[in-house]
Amino acid sequence: MAESRTLTRYAEIAQLLLKYRKAGVFGGLDMDENVLAEAGKGQDIPEGKPEQFASDLESLGPTFIKLGQSLSTRPDLVPPEYLKALERMQDDIAPVAFGEIAGIVEEELGVRISKAFESFDPEPLAAASLAQVHAATLRGGRRVAVKVQRPDILGTIRTDLDLISKLAGTIDRFSDVGRRYHFAEWVREFRKTLLGELDYRLEADNLETFAENLSAYPDIRVPQPVRSLSTGRVLTMDLLDGTKVTKVPDVARTELDLRTLGETLMQAYLDQVFVHGLIHADPHPGNVLLLRDGRLALLDLGMVAHVPPRLRDRLLKFLLAAIDGRGEEAADIFIEMGTRLEDFAEADFVRETSRLIAQYNGHAHSGALSEGRLIMELTRMAAAHGLRTPPELSLLGKTLLNLEAVSAALDPSMDVRGVIEHHLHQVMRKRVFKSFSPSQLASE
Image (cartoon, rainbow, N blue to C red; front, side, top):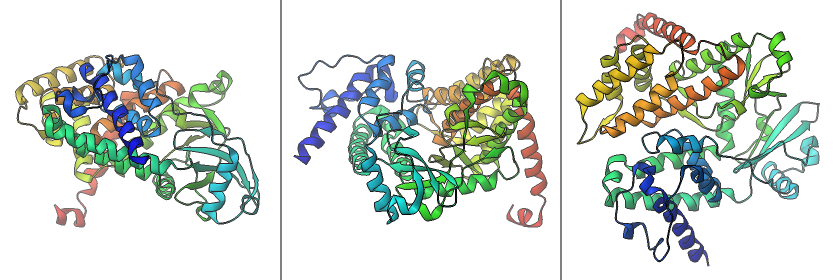
């Protein structure tokens, strides 16, 4: 029975690939249909449309909802109209019955809910594909949010990941696009990220790390975990009351300096990336709250990417070169960050990059081509010219796009480019000053 379910699932996944291959999704699969199945044999699989793409991923369950979120950062694998569809993906589903949730909490904590908590609301605050969150109160009055992993989700995800890995290996062996993009390598990284997101001890670490890194920004709060009531499947943390930045009432705009808050948030994120080497992979407007005391809160730090120091330096130099309009230098740095494929057309890529950066600088005041869009477009161009870029690059582009959306929600007139340019120059000056320290000079 289990083998039959696995074969059925494999066929469902392969049919998704067949449905969207002609649209250029996943880079355009050029392999023989027989390799992809048996799965589509005897069936008339219609060609997929952009508006159906997100829905088809959602229908395949939590693994593919997360896969869609990952693909939304890959303009080299997904055409623009499909990327737009992925932005509309929904990750809210029917909640699990409270009896099952209570059972998981008690099993994980080794104590009855009534002993660990003074109160525990059976109605969830939110229900997503991997977990749901309940409000609770600790003995002593501290209000907390309890994130509980959905039952049996880990086994489901591991099975799906095994099947996706099998397909990726097949595509890499039998297709030109697979040899170009190395899908198996990308799936390995996706597996590591997703399984890490399912270990809430790592998320608790992220909450503490971000709070420490952001200590210089008192207007930004990160909920702190309650370690004694947290495990791999249950995360208990501060409950922060606030309003999503997209739903801030007009009266609050007249009373609070939202522009300064938006600038502070942008500066804090730039520090996370270029000083601490961390990218919060999902800072969309729904994960940023305006608190009642006028501060901002960052939620959902399950997905955090680490940026190695050398790549961090190159990213900083690339952005500064782009902002200064040094197109050829920016192209050279971009090439340094990537992997040249056999058909890499370097001269064409440098020329197109210089043209795009000139366009970016020509629209500096209109914001028509933002920093996030510039990085995403260059990632797509690099793939088209035979340059494979590191995943952190497109992840940074998507993060900047999300931050731009948050900034626009707080203050539509905010000069995002000006904030980025000023802060990155400050980061660079501090880095240059630090390079004159004895220890740094010795290492150089």
